[in-house]
Length: 125
Image 1 (spheres, rainbow, N blue to C red):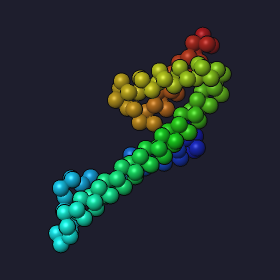
Image 2 (image 1 turned 135 degrees about the vertical axis):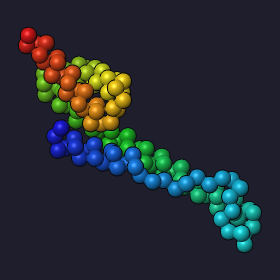
Image 3 (image 1 turned 135 degrees about the horizontal axis):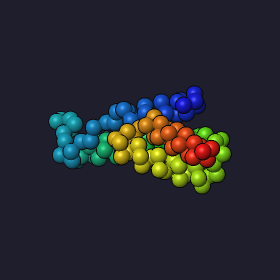
């Protein structure tokens, strides 16, 4: 895997372990000296902020994944495959990596490499 793909994979994996504030139950008490209404509003604000953080993390993670996938597709096309063929190879490798329980980016890349190598041997032979 080239350095650019490694960097994208590393950034992507950092989002996997990123902590998110804990969701509070609607009846949670933040400050016993404040009113029920105040506590409910604080809980609501906390949970809405939590949701916004999760959505932003997912958005950034998806962007990193799409950038990584595009680079992998470019690597496949460098081997003489068309865009459509590269997409099919990627999808097949993605499914294969998932079937063997390694749907990490490294596992997917390893499966792509194997499939491309196999197809290149078929072309030659």
